[in-house]
Length: 295
Ligand code: NDP
Image (cartoon, rainbow, N blue to C red; front, side):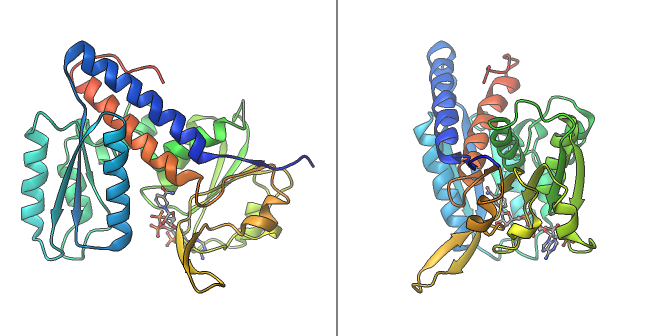
């Protein structure tokens, strides 16, 4: 067993953001176009506020105009639909991101379906999901895209690898399965109704944990030298009584067995934001019939 390769998501994300920034600057110089991202936040959930703030800051640093739109928790669904329709028509906006989860009175799928697929930088619109599964050019959802980019730094070839995804959500597990199938992996998805999860995980060359359960994945679940991607972001109170964030993977014992692993924080999280910037840049180019920038 070799030394564990800790995949530095912060460093990879910084490089991707810089590249997006360079291409956005060139686009602006040559055409006067500045890509624009509108984020829509309903309510005052502290975690969502942190995400929205960091997305806004990342946009500004990469030369993307950020439009921060907020609604109170009790906003009516029709008001939100009207706002998304307005953003669809607004020529300054290339990407629309509605921060999930939404409050109970709002049907999130309805809102996602109203977003113009060309501006759907999260890649959650059914049209874009269908294109993803069909292997057609689309907006690749940011977190799964980030996972794949991280995996590619340690796997020259993914073809034939046994990949297990823990979690089947629409935003992580399912689109990631589409990407890994397209990369010729043999994909197994496990979820809350799956029998013998540890046994299935132990067969994985690649294990992606996206269950939202702090430190659920223990060392006994890991095949020696497997690559482990930890998507989980779980707030916990540390032994010192302070709030911190841990992943779905019990990091130290798992790192001792895995061949490669992503830390939390500093793994998938920063890549998600970098991929959001990239998708906004792609949307800005595609909407105007320009070729995809090479990245
Ligand atoms: P969801 O709650 O939507 O989905 C969780 C999935 O995990 C479900 O499919 C669920 O199964 C499964 N699951 C939950 N508990 C168990 C269990 N005990 N055993 C087996 N399967 C289980 O979560 P998300 O996909 O939205 O997010 C997952 C995690 O990733 C969270 O910690 C979230 O904060 C984080 N996240 C991180 C991002 C990043 O940028 N790094 C971005 C998005 C999410 P079932 O379907 O049967 O209920």
